[in-house]
Amino acid sequence: MQRVYGAQNEMCLATQQLSKQLLAYEKQNFALGKGDEEVISTLHYFSKVVDELNVLHTELAKQLADTMVLPIIQFREKDLTEVSTLKDLFGLASHEHDLSMAKYSRLPKKKENEKVKTEVGKEVAAARRKQHLSSLQYYCALNALQYRKRMAMMEPMIGFAHGQINFFKKGAEMFSKHMDSFLSSVADMVQSIQVELEAEAEKMRVSQQEFLSVDESVYTPDSDVAAPQINRNLIQKAGYLNLRNKTGLVTTTWERLYFFTQGGNLMCQPRGAVAGGLIQDLDNCSVMAVDCEDRRYCFQITTPNGKSGIILQAESRKENEEWICAINNISRQIYLTDNPEAVAIKLNQTALQAVTPITSFGKKQESSCPSQNLKNSEMENENDKIVPKATASLPEAEELIAPGTPIQFDIVLPATEFLDQNRGSRRTNPFGETEDESFPEAEDSLLQQMFIVRFLGSMAVKTDSTTEVIYEAMRQVLAARAIHNIFRMTESHLMVTSQSLRLIDPQTQVSRANFELTSVTQFAAHQENKRLVGFVIRIPESTGEESLSTYIFESNSEGEKICYAINLGKEIIAVQKDPEALAQLMLSIPLTNDGKYVLLNDQPDDNDGNSSEHRGAESEA
Image 1 (tube, rainbow, N blue to C red):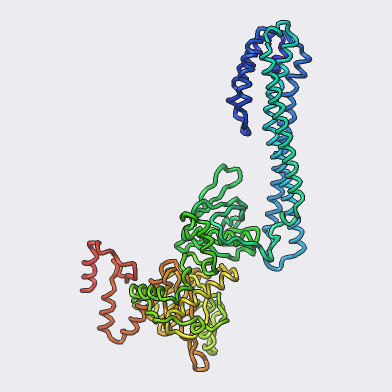
Image 2: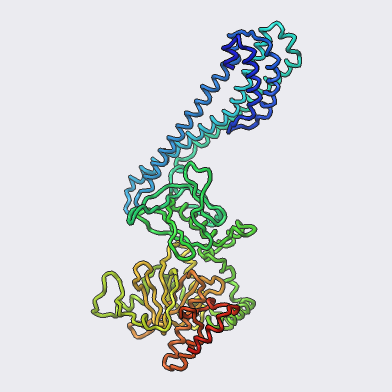
C-alpha cells in the first residue's frame, strides 16, 4: 500500500503486487486468527478489482493517505505496539508474583513472626492482584486485536476503491452498481465487526470490575487455615508446587513448578515448555506429610518398593491435603474404572476408606450377618495355616477393646518403655542404639526374614482369644488417622527370626523395638486389604499382671507373608527341644538355589523342571 501511495509513476506494477499480496493473506500465520473466512473471500474479490484497476495509474495522494495508508499504519503502530507493551507489563507482574511467593514459601513453620507473616501475605495478595489485572488487560487487548486486524485490512481497501472511483474518469464505467453494492456490504460487515468488538470490550470491562470487587482474602494464600474446605474425592489435581532438589551432599534448592496428574502419572511442566514431562508413576505409590527443612505443608511420595521419592511443598494446608488425597486416590487406580468420580466418592464415604490404599472396608458393618460369617469361614479354610479360625458368633467391639482406649501413632512402643524401666542402673546409650550383644539370636537363628513396614498405631486390648480384636484395632486406628488428618507413618524394617520380632531403623540400622516371639499371642493380615497386618503382644507388668497390646502395620508386600514367617518361627520354637521334629520341619520348607527358605507365595512353580530335583537333593542333604 505504501508503494501505491509513494510511487505514482509505478502504479501499474504496485497494483499488480498488491493483488498478489491480497491472495497470499490466507497463508499468513496469525496465531489469533478466527472468523477470517469472510475476510479471505472478500480479499480474493478485491484482488480481481485491483487487477482491473491496474490500467489506471493516477490517484489523489491526499485521499489515499487519509483513506488507505493511515488505517494500516495505525493498526501497526498503535494496536500491535499496545499488545506488545501489555505483554511486557504482564511479564513484570508475573516476575513480582514469583518473588513474593518465594518469600512466602520461606516462612518458617515454628515460632514464626505473625507481623512478618501478615506483611508477606499482603505482599503476595498485592502481587497476585497486580498480576491478575495486568493479565486481564493483556487478554482484552488480544481479544480486541482479533477484530481490529480484520478491520485494518478492510478499511484501506474501501478507501482505495473509493479513491479509484472518484479520481478516474473511467471509474464510473468500470465500477458498476454491483460493485457499489459489494462495497456497501463490506462496509456493513466492518460495522458489524465493530459492534462485536464493542460488545466484547464491554463484557471484559464488566468482568474486570467483578474481579476487582472480590475480597482480598481470595488472593491471600492459606486464608482459610482454620477450617479449609478440603475435597477428598479428587482423581486429578493441578497447580504450582515447590520441588525439592538436592544440589550436593547437604545442600538443597526448591523450585516452583506447575504439576498436574494425567491418568496414573504425576507430570511437571516447566515455564516456557509446550508440554509436561513425567515425574513419577503414582500407581501403588504411598504419600505422607513430612517435616522438611523447617518448611510447612510438605509431603513425600514413596515408590511401591519402599524407596523415598520426591518431596513437594504446597502453598496452603488445603492444597497440601488435597494433593495427598488425590495421589492416594490415584494410587488405588480409580481412574481406570468406568465412573471414577463416583468410585472416589464411595471409597471416601467413611474414614477408613479415606486413608486405605485398597478398597477393602466397605463391608465391615455387615460382618455380623450370617452371609458374612459364611464368607469368613470360607476364607479361613483357605488361610488356615495363617489365621486361626473365628468363632461362630463374632464378639462386640466393646468386648474386644475398651471404649475410649487411647491410640499411639508414633514408634515409641510400650514394650520398649517397659524394657527401659526394668534395666535398673544399667547405663543407657544416649543415641538410642542397641548394643551388639543384646540380640545374639540374629547370628544363629534358624529363621531370618526382613519386611518393609510402616507403623500405623498401637492400642491396648481386652482379649487375645480371637483375631477379631486385630481387625477391630485396624478399623479404629485407621479411622482415628482419617479423623485427625494424620498421614505421616514411620517406616521400619521388620526382622522375623525364630526367637523374636525386631523393628529396625532403615537409616541407622538401630533397633527401635524388640518382641519375644513367645509373647506374640495373635497375628493376622486383613482379609481384604492384604497389606495390613497386626499382632497382639502379651506384656508383663511390674505388678505381676499382664497387659495386652495390638500393633498395626502396613507392609509393601502381602501381610500373609509376615504371618507365615511368624507362624514358622513359633513352630520352630515349639520343636526346638526335639531335634528330629525340628529337622522334619525344616525339610518341609523348600529352599532356593542360594540356600534361603522360601516363604508363602514365593515358592517356584511346579512346571519348573529343576524344582522337584532341587527339593529332593536338599532333603537328602
